[in-house]
Length: 83
Image (cartoon, rainbow, N blue to C red):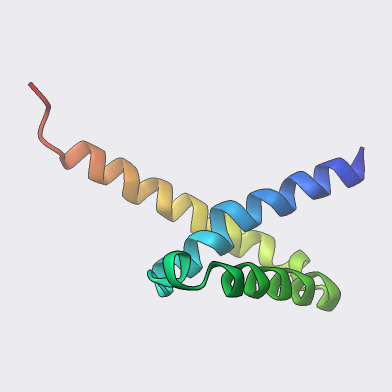
């Protein structure tokens, strides 16, 4: 059970945080060098977990998600209604 929850959290971290961050920093990476991006993500995740940074990074990740959610809500609220 704990391993499933950890794997779920890891997948969420990769998809929602790390993948999104790399997409924002390097917008051409998906199209130009997808294999290098995958290797970069794997290396980053391996380093984070081997160094124990995942414990201290949880608050930072949650803050990042909350900030993105707030920005999305503000963007949707300021968008003109569709006819």
